[in-house]
Structures are given as C-alpha cells and as structure tokens.
Amino acid sequence: MLVKRLSFVLAALVFIYGASAQETNAQYFDNKDVTILVNAGAGGGQTRVAALIADTMAQYLGSNTSIVVKNIPGAGGIKGLNVLSEATKADGLTLMFGTSNAMAQLLGKEGVRFDLSRLGIIGVGSINYVTVASTQTKKGLAERSSLMEQENLIIGGRSLTDGLGLFARLPMEVLGVSYKYVPGYQSQPKLNAAMQAKEIQVLGTGHVGYLKFYRDTLVADSKALPLFYHSPVLDDGSQQVIDLYEGKVPNFVSFYQSVLGKAPNGPMWEAYKWVSRYQIRPQGLFAPPATDQKVLDQITEALTKTLADTSFVAAYTKQNGMKPNFLVGEEAAGFIAEAFNISDAGLEGLKKLTTKK
Figure 1: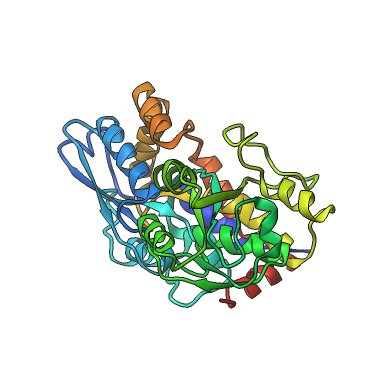
Figure 2 (figure 1 turned 30 degrees about the vertical axis):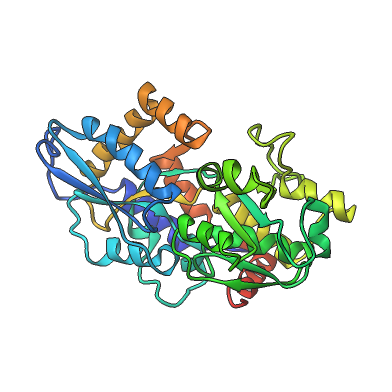
C-alpha cells in the first residue's frame, strides 16, 4: 500500500504550469543582479556546483546579468528552504540551489515551514554518494569485509534527514552494524576535519566531496576507505551500476550480498530504496512561491542552455568527475512530486531512522 500525497502532486502541477497575472518580457533579467542561495555551508560540493551554474547561466538569463552565490546553512538545509519560502521576494531575482529536503517535509520534521509544492521547481540534479570510513577504528578497518566486525562506530553528518548522514547511517542499519550518530557538521570540509581529528569514523559524501577531500588524501594514505557507493535501487532489487566506481568501489547492494549471502529486506531496506532514489537527486534549483510563470520559464530556459553549454559541461565534468545529470521543468516537477509516494514499510523505516541517534 502506498501513502499517496495526491494533493501535493496536484498542487505542484497546477502551480508550475498555471498562468499568473504578473507580466514579464524577454529583457526582464537585463542589467539585474540575481542571487542563488545555497542551503549548505561554504566549501562543499553544493556550493561548487552552484558557482559553476551561476558563472554560465548569467549570460543566458539576460544582457549584463550577474549571479552571485550566498550560503545559508542550518538544520540540514531546512533553514535555507524556509528563507526562500518566507523571506524572499517572488521576482525571480533570488533563487536557491541545494537539497530539496523532501524527507523532512514528508515526515513533518520540526522546523519545516516550506512546502515544495509551492516552490518554483526549475531543475533537479543527481549526486553519487559514497560511504567513507576511517581505517583507524578500535578493531581496525583496513578491508571492507572487516566492517561486519565493527561496533559502536561514530558517524558524523549534518542532520537527521540530510543525505550525508543518511548514506552513512542507513547502510549500517540494513547491515546490522552498531553506531552512534553525531549531527551538526554543516559542510563537507567540517566533516573532513572531524574525521582527520578522529572525532568521527564514518561519513557520507557526494562524489565531488569524495574527489576533493578523500580520494587523493585520506584514502591514498590508507587512513580512510571508501566502503561502497549508492545509486538508485532497481525494480529487481539490484542497484544501478555507476561506471566511475566499477572495479574500485562496490555498490551497497553488491557489498551486502557479498558479506551476508542474501538479498536485503525489512523496513530499513525499504527506507534505503526510497533514499537511494530521492536523495540521489537532492540538488535542485528552486524559486520562491508565487514567482510568475513567465519568469520561471525564462530561468528554466537559461538552465537548459547552461546544461547544454560545452564549456559548462567540460568544467562540470572536470570538477565533479562526471557529466551533469539534471531533470528540468516538467520532469523535475514530476520527480519531486513522486517523492511523496512511499510504502508503509519505507515510511516506518524513515521515521525510526530520523528519531534515532
């Protein structure tokens, strides 16, 4: 049985494709300054991607248009979404790039005052996540198979609902490895520093963060180990293969089967399947509620041109180790709406996970 959020779906589609009274024209963004808020700390992967988009998209928005990036971290991304929803003028000149936090809204978490169905959903992009562990645990973790022998691992993350924490905690839940969770690290640089200081032993990171902070430093020095990567779970229970990692890092499902010899199951597995799909595309470009549809159309067109720009694709690929993978416009809106359909078992797992430390 699926928990249907039909009102969300209808509201999202009506908002995004409905007409509005405000007028605009092709020169609307000419000579204007646009701000892209990022609901995460400075220095992390989200900020780096937002800066790349800003650098290229300005030329497609208008003549002499400028775009600056401003970080608003806090509450695992909830603060930035609240600011966009409540304190931002709906003129298209302030946008937000960052995590959609669909889980926080789905579960009605404390502090959530935004409603994704009311935002202008311009595009959503995917991130490959990797779970990284220190090799210097009490029992030692030089090889992946040693993970099953670990006890009371200390996991760091941003909040109870963010991807960095989820892709570290959920695998341990499914595998049955005990841990303690320490939230409050609002950026990847802070998580990296915490691991180097031995405050934490396991963390989740997007692919950008993995390349910048771990692969050529802690991992290369054998002080950390990439345990597994995360991608959408397919209908047959297998996991989408990411060529970037093949032969180097296993996906989570493959690792689970290799150490336990069976397919994963249970509420936490159902929760993992949801997270693997809807946290893999957590980064979105959003506009405030009630933004004029014609303005949204212009921004969507500018983002589409940005994603097709050869210089942008080259810079993005160099920075992130992969080509950009975004859904735009109608596809993006549909994806966000789908996130509010979840099985009862999956919902049970998410509720348990987000109340446990």
